[in-house]
Length: 143
Image 1: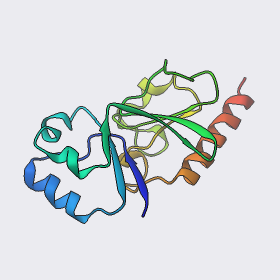
Image 2: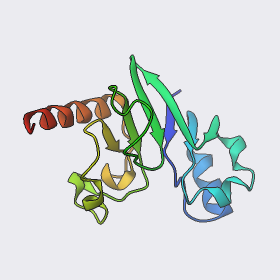
Image 3: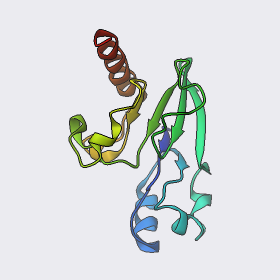
């Protein structure tokens, strides 16, 4: 019964990989399209998701969240307590991966929910909330 937001690059590989993975998943899955999804989503997989989109605005427990595959420095609400969750980059744990240096300008209200940054597991809203609160507290201390 979970609601899952997948922020792109759902699966590398073709028809067989997509089918194998989709057949194992439960819940209502919303796919924010990533750069590696476009070819496969044209092959009829859109019907396997609740919705496919390039971006979404959602609200969870009164928290406004912008979902996109890519991190943005300018997005609606960036300066008004809106979070942005993204994938695409490969930061690895504690921002040590190959793309880490490119993320220095991110807001503390942004977080990479990509699997390589999160022990290859889904990230719950509660965990994201704790992480972003910690990032905001750290940013306020550094002012």
